[in-house]
Image (cartoon, rainbow, N blue to C red; front, side):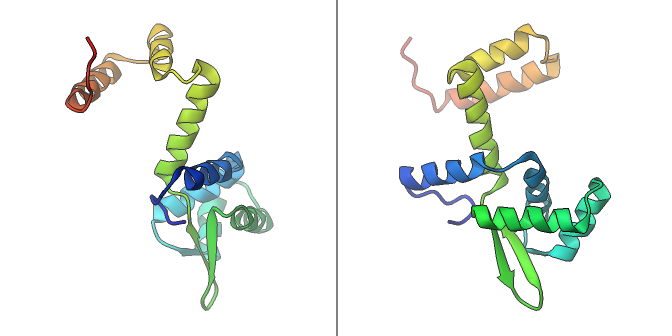
Length: 145
């Protein structure tokens, strides 16, 4: 599997299963890899995470090992091991967003937006941005009105 490549529903289901198993701590490791957009040696991953967290080197190694075992990170042996993500940030975000909508709003994105609006979580700029997004999307949406 390669970032951004999903061929069929079986592969999509498999990818979603992998993503669902990423813990919050493992997500921090994934963010380092996504930010880089290239494979990284453990020394760079460790330095980056030590600057952001209070994790020991052994914790970081364990998280990377778990991500490799889960199939979301690839380890390649060169002069040292290099690590690359196999699940893109976009794929992760898409899955987790849909999972949240399914869990809390019974699959309705409209209910999510309504909840944000009614709880005053959206400011005027957010609302204007959403309006612009919906206008762009109007060209691609068939209406049954």
